[in-house]
Length: 333
Image 1 (cartoon, rainbow, N blue to C red):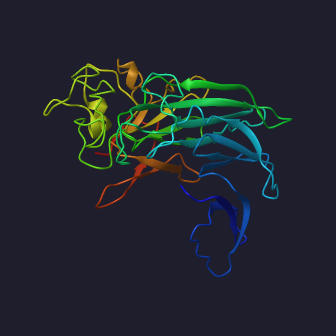
Image 2 (image 1 turned 90 degrees about the horizontal axis):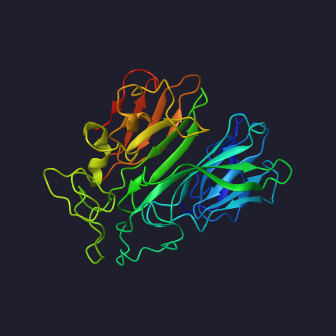
């Protein structure tokens, strides 16, 4: 996430957008920089009318009128709300399919505060991890919606929080909330890591690096209350959050999962696989058991969902959800 420009590459095909960092141009292709000077661009989304939006990891949302527009408009600056540390930042962006009649863009990021707290708190620092490891500084994810003024391309009314609180609680800086996209049927899909560390086998035993101040069980993972240490074999913290749906007696959270929601309310869609099972907190889920599903996409012409799940030291994983609305909820392990 360190590239600072966007490029268009074409060979008589639909335009694609990618980073130009270390790009290898195949014969017959051309490459041209269309935007530069962006601070760590993380996502790009096109509106049906040709406008496109770009998010910077630090919380800035930019609008371009098209590929030939050299000067972006700042839609909104959420830098005081976004925590930039480890894998965290403003990472998800989606444009409403009904744009501009529905003039909304949707944003997914980690809040610069302790779970359930008020930002800014960490101010993009992590005092609990002085070693620089991706550990410590518990926080939570947020899904919000912004209304774009059609004359100025600037946000009006600030952001509307659709899903907040501690639904995506992340004990560590790695594996935070990830990607955001609309499905072909108009539902909004969200992916999130399990909020565990990338540094060691994490079952909730640490809150930070070895030289950090420890906050035991900041996410309140069962069976211990928040502030109380977890221990084997009963722990449900760390990477085990990805299996939250397999345990009863606690509210199901969105960490380590793919969720499918109504973009107006953030509630589950009535045809989600677990709706009606008597456990309302898991109704948003369509898949779980994921480590860090950083990006996903729909197979063109279908509603098949293909998910890129970040691995560890041995392999990476690509997962397929054949039908997000069937009666099966996939567990990827």
